Image (cartoon, rainbow, N blue to C red; front, side, top):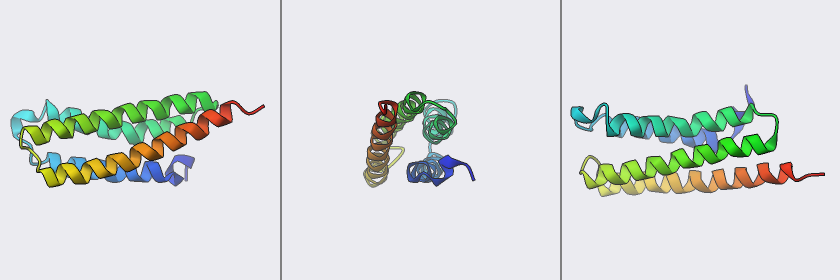
Length: 122
């Protein structure tokens, strides 16, 4: 088992991936190369960047990948808000996903803080 597989934030982001893939199945087919693709790629990017960050030797580099994961998470949030505006998902679905994003966001912030503290150890 690799170290990222033990991270709760990675596990939560994987769960979010499943939800995003599931709900985006119902998006109109004309969105296949638009919002559907963008949303899925951003969602996957969260867990991929968490994993890639753990392979870096310096805590500063690790923190950078955590920042990228956070940015991708915000992209997911924006995309699902747009999906709701376009009535591709319901307000309830938006609320459920938003709660998961808020939780992952807090976890990523905590992870980044811990990584940056390691960088400042003597």
